[in-house]
Image (cartoon, rainbow, N blue to C red):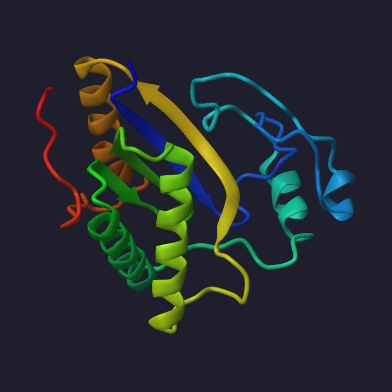
Length: 189
C-alpha cells in the first residue's frame, strides 16, 4: 500500500524532453529543440542526473527556449515556501521533507485523498501565485516545468530513506540545510 511519495518537480528549462540522459517525455513540443534530438523516453526509476552528457549541447538547446531557464534566488525560494505553506495548511497535506533548490524541488508527501499529481499541481499553483504577489516571478509564464517525477513509498524504511535523501539534497549543491515550517516530523504508522 502506498504510504507516501517522493516527488521531484523542476523549474522551467531544467530538464529538457530530449536530454541525452533520458526523460519521461513522449515528444519534443518545440520545433527549435527538436534539432537537438527526439524525446529520450525512459522508464528508469533511479536518478540519471549524474550520467555524463554534453553540457555545451544542453546549454545550446536551452538557448532555444521561449524564456531563459529559471534559477530561483534565495528570496524566490522563501516566496515559494510561503506558497507551499499556504497550500499545505489549506488542504491539510502532510509533508515530511522539502528541499527547494535553484532549479528543482524535492518533497516527501504523505498519502492523501487526492492523487499526488494533483497535490503537486496545487503546490506549484500556490507557489506561482505567491511569487507573483511578492513581485518575484521570474517571467510571465509559469516558472515550473509541466510534469515531474514521483516514487511511491510503501514501507517505513522507504519513507525514512526518502526523507534522508531530500534533507541531504541541499548539501549536494553546496547549500545550507533547509527547515520549513510546513514540514511535519514523520512518525511510523
